Amino acid sequence: MVNKNKDIASFEDLLVWQVSRDLRKRISSLCEKLPKSETYKLKDQMLRASRSVTANIAEGYGRFHFQENIQYCRQARGSLYELIDHLSVGFDENYFDKSEVAQIKKETVRTIKLINGYIGYLNKSKANKVKEPEIDYSINEPTNNEIND
Image (cartoon, rainbow, N blue to C red; front, side, top):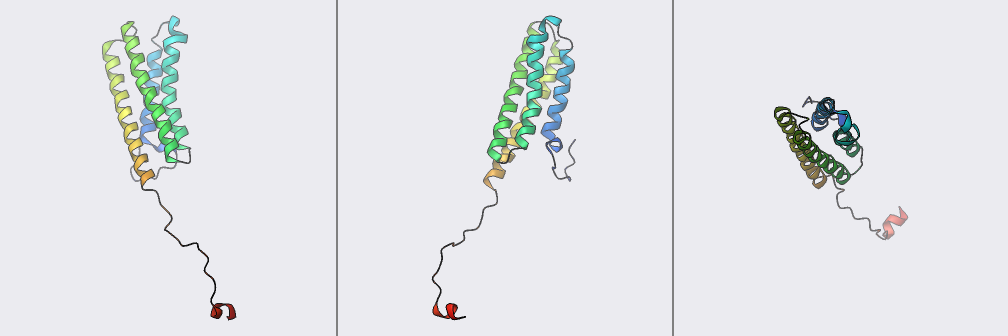
């Protein structure tokens, strides 16, 4: 996981991305249990949603403005909620058992909480960004002494 003493040099250093990556791998493994008839249905949707989470965190990190980063994090959060729905579909169709759905849902909710925390951090950073001190840019007419110097 993230070393708290280390500077964040890449989106890969973010705990939220690391946890999302682990979840993505879990979803990928879980999808192997799906029947062939779900290859282009539930399996495809689950894989796309799980990949969307890490991809949106990465893309948001690469954006220049805090607000853009926040928007991509919101997209990632939406994909996590989509995954919860897909898990319920898999359970309702008897593809997944209750305990594995409960465990992955717990991991998904943890990831949602991390994204919410990251969004909060970005909002605070946006509000506290360094601002230029007020400077008087008006041009004053030179005095006679300044002209003769």
